Image 1 (cartoon, rainbow, N blue to C red):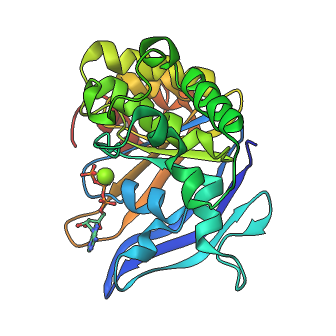
Image 2 (spheres, rainbow, N blue to C red):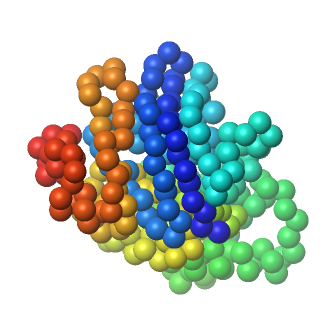
Length: 259
Ligand SMILES: Nc1ncnc2c1ncn2[C@@H]1O[C@H](COP(=O)(O)OP(=O)(O)OP(=O)(O)O)[C@@H](O)[C@H]1O
Ligand SMILES: [Mg+2]
């Protein structure tokens, strides 16, 4: 659990369009890294490339290198399905399987992995994952109710439980709180703080206070203009980025002067 990601000279293309250019950064284990920057600068694009999720988009490809604890994720005999198992993703909108029960939702990733489990083992995974996602107490008496019977914030925690059930090394979260109310947002932020003891976490957020609250490292992305590729402007300790960033563009962005 909790592995390190090393990204070097990463560029990402959608067909002829270069969306991201020349990103080099290290994502540390047992820490939260926030990606911030204006809309369209490539935050989601970079995030998706970290578990090869962009490969489901026709004509999307990367150049450069991404390594997980030294292993090239794009190596010739690396199975993208295995990559996505070890690097899980939580999306902006909670997306539980609506008709599946809460328990079945938690186990959905494991079923895809084709693991055979006894009932006792399955119960154990359901409980530990729901506990890990801070949802157990709220749902333990209704595990057979459909996933859609939960509130938005609970659904998002269910999705996090589903992601951690397969025991990934890294958790990627793309604006996981943007569809949630402030209370649910705080619940997810608390959870992120707890999960970082075991996982490497990358979170994309438009909420500067959130980045400042939950992350250890912050990466600021920007783009020079429409049609230009996004670039990593700087990455540093979150405290430094929010108090005394190196680049003027970073200061302008975090102080709300643009973006
Ligand atoms: N599936 C796609 N096909 C073609 N171009 C895409 C695709 N997804 C994103 N892009 C383009 O890549 C660039 C970066 O988009 P991306 O979604 O990564 O930005 P973002 O920083 O996540 O923005 P936001 O903050 O609005 O979510 C944009 O110009 C976008 O239009
Ligand atoms: Mg995005």
